[in-house]
Image (cartoon, rainbow, N blue to C red; front, side, top):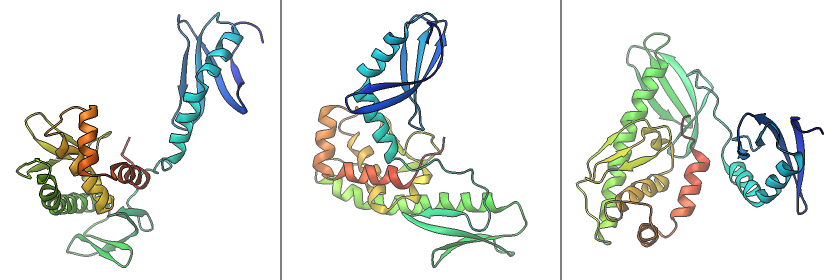
Length: 241
């Protein structure tokens, strides 16, 4: 291929073959990116030699394969919600089918694997479902907070138990230096053991604010199987993008 060309390429890393897309830009540095779908993109300077690009991909081979393995563990992207009968919704770790009903008393009931959503008029399903999920998140997190505070107290961690709910794109929860706790209402879609993981994760920040070695040592004492719970959470429930 002539210098400056673009297109599909393949690099050999040990016994693995790494397909990648080569693009050119008016820039001085060469970058390698693993995209959310697992594909590899190499963005190179306009005149960078092809063999230099391939060598860079090979040098990053272990990192590329590791990223692809991690991405393969994640659930597929969620389709856009339409709030119609037949949609699959997760609540406390279990899948439920949404079924729309018409009635004067709006609300949601969980009955034998279904979310029965009663709306007064068409077009109200989203508001009714989201309001119900938020109210259930508040109730479930309050219940689990009581349990988690009792458990955390054995490790010298104390808190009032007060928290707020806020939709967050990249976080399940947060803790400020002053001890203010905030949680994502989507957490109610996860099993209770995963809810406990998020609550205890944030409560540990009351003692160790940053994600330091000391923090993870504390988290490991408070919740020895936190990695398994985190993996299950990320496998079952996807944060909105």
